Length: 204
Image (cartoon, rainbow, N blue to C red; front, side):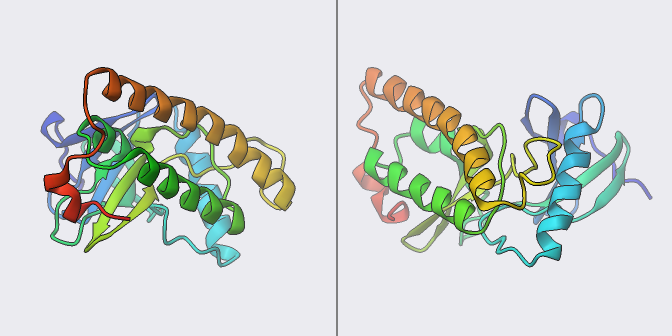
């Protein structure tokens, strides 16, 4: 039986896909393409490749198969939660709400970058909306929930370390530009980029 989805289940809208909360299982979300399924197809193939080579995928939301919904075939992904069951905030939300200091954000992003490069995971079109900040006690992990994909049709790109780093660097430059813009906007609004009363739950 198809999973029944409506607009009330929408939790995010990207350039190519719409993300829905799974109506009966809070541990999952479903991504459906707006138009053609090019991005999802490329993503599926790449995740299968990563799984086959035994890549460490602890800091990326992993494709878990297709599901049939009332709106068409969707891709199933885990929903990232904090240690008390709350859905983890995106990096955009964290910055806009002033929940972490600038240096903590930079450190978290640096760790995520090092993880991607050291594990040979390619990325494309990353934004602060594609990263969530998962709280586990006083630890905050940056998890990539979208943008893991082969960046082009060259099969060597996902196999040669130098080309993998080049692909990550390209998407990372764009990401850092967006992050800096968000930080400057928050600072311009007079926010401290860190609220002491909330510091116990957002410490790196």
